[in-house]
Image 1 (cartoon, rainbow, N blue to C red):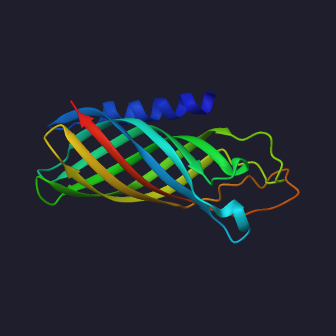
Image 2: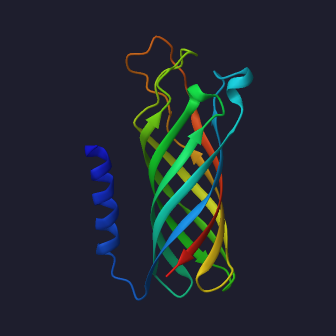
Length: 185
């Protein structure tokens, strides 16, 4: 719980410390198509999971075409097998470049804290680690001034499995395709 509060504090400190010309706030809702990329996971365990993503965002103008969009979101990830399901609270820090008023490209880091994993582990898989770090790239379409659609790919940079206290050592990285719709105030 303390880690969640720390993540929330960092997120809100970041939002309030930015001196920007224009700021907007909003929400995003969408679907994840996620998996854990690992040579150690085979058979039915490597099937992808469809999950949900829900979050809040702040949108700050840095220049006429460049924007900073920190977010705070819930994300259901992992693989389809229940022993490989994991949910995170994540903070993506997205840098958006508006190619036109309609299209933008997105890039940035993402940090996540595990808030849930399947506890009845019958497949003898190690526990998930507490933190997950990823690089995010995507494209966005501004349907109106308020409504938008994003398509993102998150590439895990850290091992999602905890190596401490486990008889089996697995290495795996998260992979996630995310399609979301959003509304900016």
